[in-house]
Amino acid sequence: MAASSRKPKECSKSELILGNLAIILWIGLGAFSCWLFFPWAGLVYFAVVAFLVFYEIGKHGCVTCYYCKTCTIGIGKLPELFFRKTGTANVNRRALKLFLPVYFLLTLIPVALFGFSIYQEFEAYKVGLLVAVLAFSVYTGIVRRKNLIP
Image (cartoon, rainbow, N blue to C red):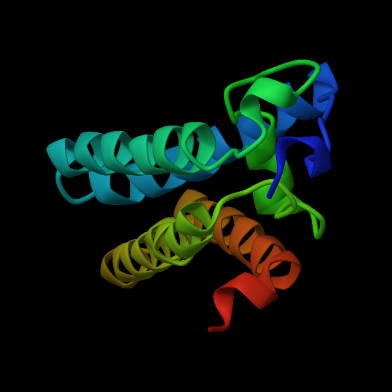
C-alpha cells in the first residue's frame, strides 16, 4: 500500500485514554485470575500480555504511524482494533494474525481460572470479575468476529 493511499488518523484524547485503560483493565483482570493461584504467574501473565498487546500489536501493528496527525506509536489503533468494527484499516497482517492468540490469552485463561476458583470457593467478587472478563470478551468477540473466525 502506497503512503499516499494511507489515511492518517487523528485520535481523540478521550478515546485514546479510555480505550487503553479498558485494555489495561482487561489485562489486569487476567493477571488477577492468575494471581489467585500463584502471584508470580499473575506478574508474568501481565508482562507477557501487555508486551504482546502494546508492543507487538500496538507499536509494530500500525502501518501509518509516521503519517498520522497525532502519532501515538500505535496506541491510538488499539482501542479501535479491540472495540470498533472499523479498527483494521491501518493494521498490518502480522498484528491481525497475532490478534487471535492474544484474544484467547485475554479470554480463555481468565475465564477458566476464575471459573475454577469459583468452583473451589464461591465468593461474589470472583463472579463479578468473571462477568467483567466475559463482558470484554463477548463485546470484542462480536466486534472482531471476522478476525477471530479463520
